[in-house]
Image (cartoon, rainbow, N blue to C red; front, top):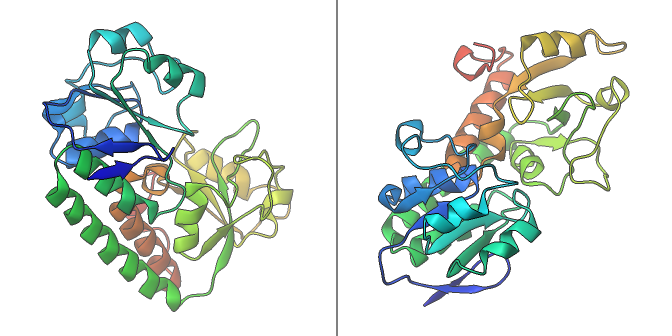
Length: 279
């Protein structure tokens, strides 16, 4: 049996002992959660979860600008990459010495199911992959039930400051938020991560969400945005960017997190302390 990656390239079950280098933080976490921690021999400096496991795994640089020779020295059988997070020209250089490059590109929450089964099949972790699929389906159904009783809201989700940047509706982040009944602004954007002007971009939004990554928005930034002209009384708060943008094994937790946020809002409550990024 074979499984297809994001480029449509087939991958068969690997018969030997894999040596995996992950150049994507969420994929490193997924590898560990599938029970493959011993096979993970290299990671980027941004691969920080689960901390207790990955801190003992050698770093090869960043998702972009990784050290090719450090990767080569680890003699990987597989390198895991992502179309959005890694540069194509750098990944192409890996093909000279890496037997198996697995390219990923989840664009919507339910793409996680194929991702789990791809890794589970290639690395012989089908049972763990199916357990993740079942967990995802439970959380997906629970979120849909919560959202079904609520009105949809337009939101402005900010990922950067100076310049202010948001997300287009074709991104994984936007589609995660859409699953929670939050439709991101701008509705139409040529860029996947467009620059926006504040306060104008926030005026039609029911709320403004300031992500904890890649820009580390904090309470002072909430105050900054809330004080802008025309935004008095607008709901402005931080949100855990990892829960919204990390696909892989983080996705079921992300769905559960979004359900808690929506339920708290529906009940007229503020952000619960355990969900507040400023606590």
